[in-house]
Image (cartoon, rainbow, N blue to C red; front, side, top):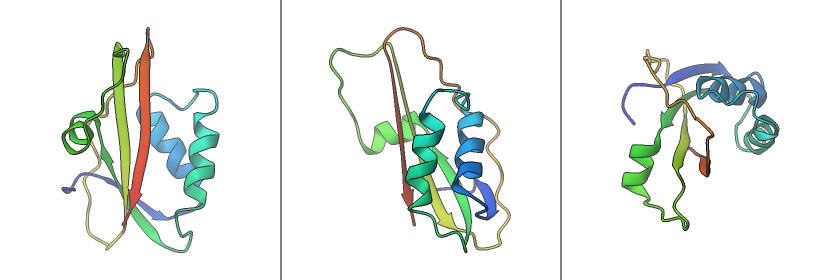
Amino acid sequence: MGEIGKNLGKTPTPLKIVGQALEAYGQACTSGILQQQMQFWSNKLDRSKDYTVYPQETLRIDAAMPVTIRPTPEKLYRIWFYFAEAKGDYVKSPSTTEKIERKGFTVVEWGGMVQ
């Protein structure tokens, strides 16, 4: 996963984690996405643990799991988050993130994994 990620500390609420991530990708205000992601991750993350999240963007996800969509979208974004229990190590925050631009036929895939 590399050393680039974001240490989340004690998981205060899944809403905070997901909200920060969506904001980084320019999606914080997109109707429904925040609630859907918050609800999903609230059932997956142990609130008593510290986590580091490693964003996995389109190129990395495409290399691991190619996808074919017909008709072909004008824009395809595949954003996955790898949540790992924090081990107290320094983790460098990502310097950039893909900004999701919804123009024309756009597909956005959100996913994730918990270690």
